[in-house]
Image 1 (tube, rainbow, N blue to C red):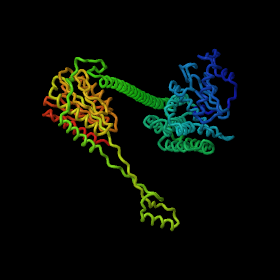
Image 2: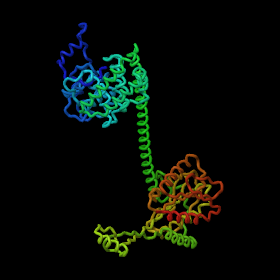
Image 3: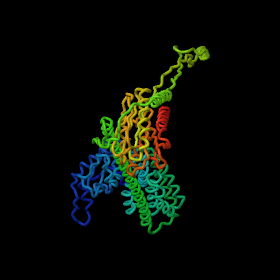
Image 4: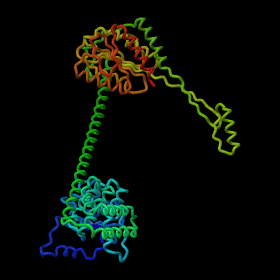
Length: 598
């Protein structure tokens, strides 16, 4: 097993001699690299910059070029402070396409980066040195145990590198299995250390490595495999600098193999069996990693789609607010009927004139004003605090307790003075918006709603100067009957219902923006007087606005006058068989709205 290739002693020959030795076979000319070795100097320098974060060491040099002196994909030279890296691991990428200094660039070459992380783990944790005269076989076994130990230690500080270490296992282990330096039982034991050792440190999953576990148990026997498992588990706990303990575990490894090997039959095709089992493990890890990558990509795409949807929703709401502001401006600042875009529509004006309020209406406004003031009244809040010093009322029990604490020599904790602070709670204002349908089927609502609009506006102005009300008559156009001002209206605006179609959505937008019905801090009520006999699109637009208001805490009341009326989802439906009871119903709902305000 060539696991020791990843930790190398100092090089004993120059680069040129190593290259000649590599091609010293049949006299064929050396193959030309796909790119000049000089082009990889930058890649090696950038890998060296990233090695600082991976290993925690700043004294290491990374060389990257086609081929390596050791023949392994990568190697760490402890005495030279060098990590050697084969540029072929980046294939098919060329040097100008590789930028390791950029965080995240490694996702384009996970296999190469996995090998680099493995060597970084050696650089960080393979810091013990073999003593002079150590048994080469024991050192070889220690280096074998070192493979999974350093990866386990690396995962403790950088758990997110697990994916890359799983990839490096496929790159590093499979060539060692196919071209072993150990034979027979020692070969099977080495495979167990490389695969099952990685399982026990969390690189591989138990289910993924089951093929190797079953084969090694069959070849090595349950007792020997349990002994080897105990040895590499103990080696995983060895300190980075503890060469004595590491070599002791390695000697125990060799002794266990020497004791058990003579009694164990070796299958003739052991190498093929081990290669097949390791291949199954690597295929399983590749499938798991691909599934995880696909799940991660799906989650990323879902988050991106969600973010895009949220951005679109925000843009849509912002556009709706701008349109609502323009609609409110055109409705409330124009004397007459307008389209939602502000275009005047004088021929569709439902207003028939104004009149003086009746004595009954004036009396109803005064009663409603008193009811609103009573509903808006809030008791003063009291806050009691204690202190060891005045001001405040003296509590004799606490004073005696404080004297007793002082006499006992302890730090006094009793606070004998009590202070009560009373604060006035602000009276919440009222916001009431009335949207009345003036299509041809709503003729019966004209007189009572006109009266109710004046009563509510008058009462709100008399109750609190910050209270606002407004009334909009809508068909396909919008007309302001009362506007959101702080002055009480002097006259009642009368109107007729002779329009066609409906535009409740824009009417709600105008009332919402003009009265701030979506903003907390006031008693908020929207009253919709309609039979709701709309088309599907008109209903959908209205229901969307109603849902937004109710979510914001605004009460929405729908008044209907005929049994054939439809219910707008999200509203509180109130059927009035007698239209004349509409003012009382609206006044009651306004009182409840301000009473519920906190």
